[in-house]
Length: 242
Image 1 (cartoon, rainbow, N blue to C red):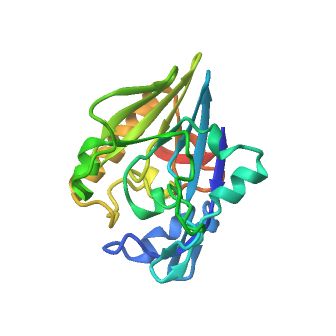
Image 2: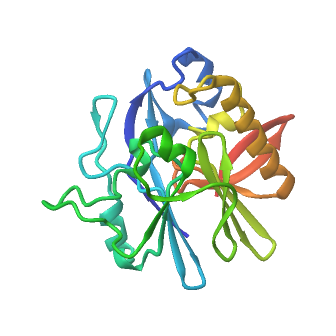
């Protein structure tokens, strides 16, 4: 498993929640706070199963920007640094089509903007694609096995991934959780949620499943390296990076 990060600086996304409400997390997640701002992690993940190599989300491209602040993506450079060939990716799985999850689909740093992963199938949920466009792509509807032990399943506004290896499980959650703190404060408003109550329910459901199955939880916006365990402390639920 491999994670690539391109940290960005973003205004408080929880616009209906005063910044002071996050004070209990200042000590446990200091990397997320800078005055009145969140510092948001933008991660991508590679999973290998048999002859398949799956990239989940592609982050920002080289010209990325978040709320007026530069957030250039580092995915291509990270691939080179880790010795992973761009043409070794067999599937690009997109949890959803926000710009910070699809920005390196194309080589925006090259004049002709070719596909970044020329041998890959680009996989996205049918409902999400229809929300943004009417053209066809490699669409999924319902649960879809991408490779042995790697299964996409629909979650509100997303496709998520279940990664299973022997007795181990992990869940990739996209923007269902926008930070580790939301594993604890599931009811706090998160501005990307088009339907606030549905977003709250989705957060509770995916965390309940993670606890029930003893699964790790992987999120593009979680603290580096982006995966961790759900733990209980004094009756409350927390995400702990591993």
